Length: 225
Image (cartoon, rainbow, N blue to C red):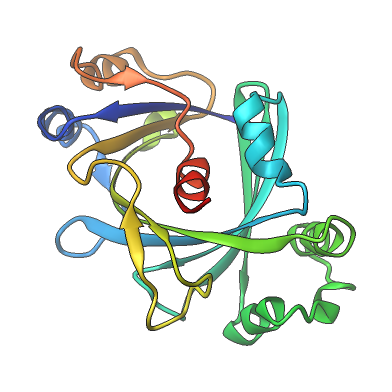
């Protein structure tokens, strides 16, 4: 089922106000550490025409992109993800891959994917071999998330949004990152299926944030180009 996604660029004060409201009705993300946050690192792929970035900039109704994601820099969980946008709805499908499989992808050795029974892997394989996808940039940030289970609502606060500037190896030990927006600013994303409950809608409003089509991938690619 397609999920809706709203994005807001907000300042630190607004972020704290909204978080304090949400804590009264929402649970924390189970992936969070004792401080309530975790680090997200995503390696994005694009083709020889930079279709993913151009589709986003042009506001294309139908979009698809692939990324590989790890959390807190750990090798234990590596996800291959496919994101599809259709008008104002989105789908995300993911599959776990091993470190060895990740390294094979980075070495352009795709044979293990050819006969996979997982459609995310086979779709990725098709794009790698026909659209010549290549790893383009690592998008790195700190996330704090809240979940409202009754409405399948998830609100995330992403800060310290950084772009890799010297490497595209997610598991690299010497990666250098640079901030792509002001360090103190936060991207709040509100994701929900069906409808957004009215009381949640009120909680996320402060009058000091602007809803906008902000893409971390586009921001990071634009920074290094």
